[in-house]
Figure (cartoon, rainbow, N blue to C red):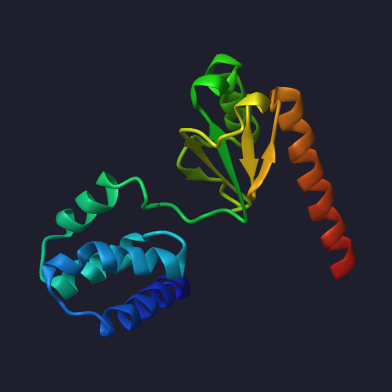
Length: 167
C-alpha cells in the first residue's frame, strides 16, 4: 500500500466515524470525502462501500451519476471552459480544443503533473466576453487559442519564478 493510499484510507475512516452507516448517508458521505480530498479516489469509495455494507458498484454508480463528484484529483489550477450558447457560437469548442491540445488532457481530467484540471461548464454569465474560460476563478474573456497559449505561458513563467526563489 502506497503512502497516498494509506493517507486516503485514514482520512476516509475519520470522515466515516462521525456518520451513521445507513445507506441514505451515501451522498453526504461522498460530499464530505470530496470536500476533504478534492475528489473521490477509488480507495475511498471502497471504504465507503464496506462501511455501508453495499456493493462497490453502487458507490461508483452514484459517484458517476452526479456531476458534482470528481473521480480524478484536482489540479493546482482549474480551468473551466464555458460552452453556453454565446460561447459555443463564438468558438468555445475551438477554445476547448486548444486547452485539450496544450494540456494533453480531456474534460474531467487532470494533467499528469497535477498542475491543471479541465472541465466544461454550461454558462458563466459573461456572454459579452465569449468565448470564456475561467482559470482559478478568474474570468478570461475572448479566450481564443492564442489567448490560451498566453495564459499557459504566464503560469509557466510564474512556476519558473517560484522555483528560482526556492533555490
